[in-house]
Image (cartoon, rainbow, N blue to C red; front, side, top):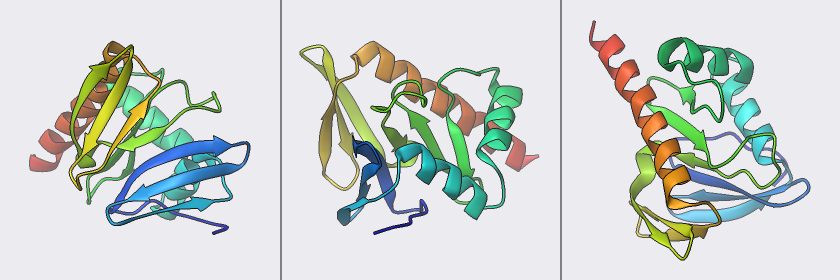
Length: 148
């Protein structure tokens, strides 16, 4: 596949080599010829904003400016967060709403998804937990604003 936009069934974007990413969806996974960051940026634009605009929005809402969670599409609550700096090639992006649980495993993290799948990532539990909680904070602020 040459192009891809995140949708409500997208669970995670995993870099596999220079310009290739594995996309995991609820009932499917496949490879696209795009960097994970390209998919994130293209998806923000698809839903009417830029990545930079979303990044600035996150900073204004939460104060988070490094390894920021990003609202891809707010009405469907599509929020993604990076497992490391988005500038790094090994950065995985995950959908907040698809994560069921996660745990530590020999210095790495295992992430369990609602569809029954799980993946082990080379990120410490504390780092993953911090990123997950930051994305949850963004979601909570967004939800409160929608209610007003």
